[in-house]
Image 1 (cartoon, rainbow, N blue to C red):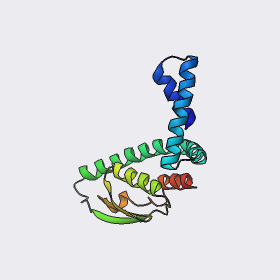
Image 2 (image 1 turned 30 degrees about the vertical axis):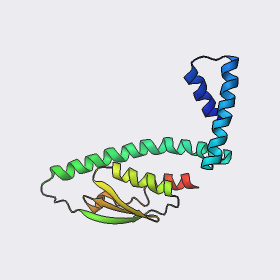
Image 3 (image 1 turned 90 degrees about the vertical axis):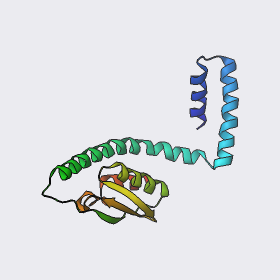
Image 4 (image 1 turned 135 degrees about the horizontal axis):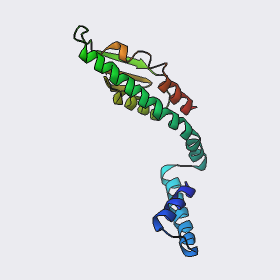
Length: 152
């Protein structure tokens, strides 16, 4: 965190001199120490976050592909008058342990066309969907598996 704050300091100043670097180091140390004391951050926690960044970089394209696939599915369901939509409320047992991972999955489900996360309780998410087929396999899907790897 100290390094990121110092780099931000240098970028915002627009030039690099000895005085700016020394003052920046002091300000960075003060802000970083205050953040650690107030919010409970530790260097170990920052390192764990940095190690998870590659998984987030994989998660985003997978989510975009799921959104595109669901968009096509919703389009086909709407344009096919012979197949009526059977809306449903489905409770999905995710197996996720952390609140953050559950939060990310619930919002990913809501971003996906045809599904809305209604409620989360423990490791369960209640989802409203246009048809049950749209939500099937979420608990064993790639998004959920990536989030489980981020929790570990």
